[in-house]
Image (cartoon, rainbow, N blue to C red; front, side):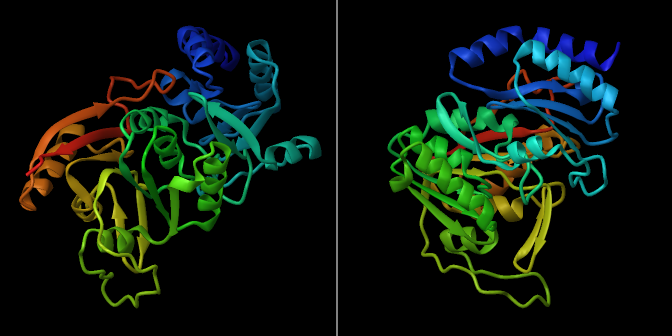
Length: 337
């Protein structure tokens, strides 16, 4: 099958999902997930009033791009932005026409379940300002935040925090190291009229969550610690932990394969008894049950218990080969005592 035929097939298989999205006031979703649907490394998403085509393994030819554009136009006639990210560092390689470049670099607005978010298809970072596979996480948080205090770690542009506030959270604390991401988070809060309940802390996550958990702030061996915001110990009703795959800082190493517990332990200790911690791991080779068992052991080592758990599964616009999506999300509710 040609690229265009594979895209037509993917859109056809999403007919029910696309109808539900329209009914739910959602105009951001994935229409082609190439790894599973036939073109490895190609993704095509709807971001508000635009299509975003991204290639991560191999550049598209002009003919391929035009044939995909025709199929998208038949679905919804919107500008199509192509970001070729097939280089090893995933940076965007290809220029756009001046008109499309201006459009891609401008702040756009999109809606997900009626919540307004900003998007920018090209900016100083690499990714659009909302990860669409996390829609189910935002839905969970919105549904479980009413009257609660929420801590959103590795918050990026605060999509989770915004959903929590819209869902009636009493307070939301967003923590991220990027001033750019937090600025976008502030805009998201403003768009939805929830700024008064949202706090934005620019900090490395390690010192932030260790202080909140009442733990000592340490660092990697022989690393001089830079300054960081001082926080007082505090526990939250709902904690959301969505770290990147790997990152190093003077305060510690984020490593979702070998050392998730160095993140999980302080985040869990910052969760109230009877509260819920939602944990995410986006590394495909991490086996779901092995990861869950390690989380439960970590809880029990701290003298606490998991009262209940719930797996949160990605929506069907992000299919997987065998039902085991690379993005694993589990909500652990801790026992009252």
